[in-house]
Image (tube, rainbow, N blue to C red; front, side, top):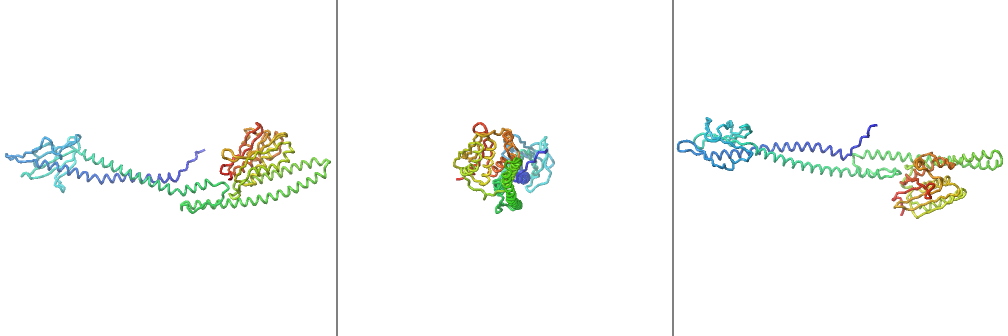
Length: 465
């Protein structure tokens, strides 16, 4: 079976859609900044190189023999100084190529003067790249060509430093934009998060429509469709409830009449061979009536069948008193000691459902407790949670069957061994009603070391004031 693909959140999708364009903008911004700063930096260094040439021109003086003398100091002036990893060359020559001073093999830049009167070019000299500037002058009376050349290491470093500075600046700006965008996305998604919490926090019995006043326009069609679905489910539940009410009446009335007729027939046939058959027929009708009532109760216990308005504060000791009153005669007839340990506690729930639950638990306990045994009903608060339990000293339920007995129509080993009649719906009803109330049904060993203890733990919020 293929692994189920994990869904991606809207937050992550928006982030992924923003991140790629921002990275492209960052690269484009650095490229544009580099292109913008290269020309001014080169112009600045060309101007510095031209100042070096002018400094050399200022030190050219004619001698008495008509020759020219280039009086450069042993330590070049500031414009001529180079860093350790840089090289600087100069050449003073005549237009015919005769070298007066400097490096004779240094080439002369082509005569394509710029606005400042210098000619610039890039070339390789002695195995290294150089930026070369030539200045043609006749200030000394004779036409001269002053050529200076330097390695571009210094200007390359300047460009690199500015590139790094612009990259850091653009990155910080993009990061700030991304953080602001993420904050904006988080704020914009708050209505969706509130809607998600509202849906997740709704109990199963709540079929009222979701509010749409704060829902974003993009999600409004989804919420409206969900409200339409909730409305259909609510109508279906109401229709089911009407059917169950009618079915309960239609089933109980003829079964009650049939039982009455069988009781009359049993009196009339007392002492005759038909009495045994009439008794068997009465038992079958009683089981049929019990099964019908259990089925109807199970159907009406569905979580979707109950609205929040059906839930009221229920006093558990009072509920226990009513169930004991209705079960006392039966317990005495079976020789069972019936008692209660009821601490004051209230829960929020549907009264008739909890009454039916306690009746089912009491019925199971009486069915599976032998004569001379005892049954105790308890209620109270433990660790902040209200609880209701029925503790018997019967045959108990094996550990491996405690999950199965919650299933519908499953009859446990203890039912077979004790000879008790039942349709296997009692604990299924108890488990279903427990879920309706947000409670948990636990099947434990009896407190006397034998038997079974059926315990319902209600949520802390279910406790009344």
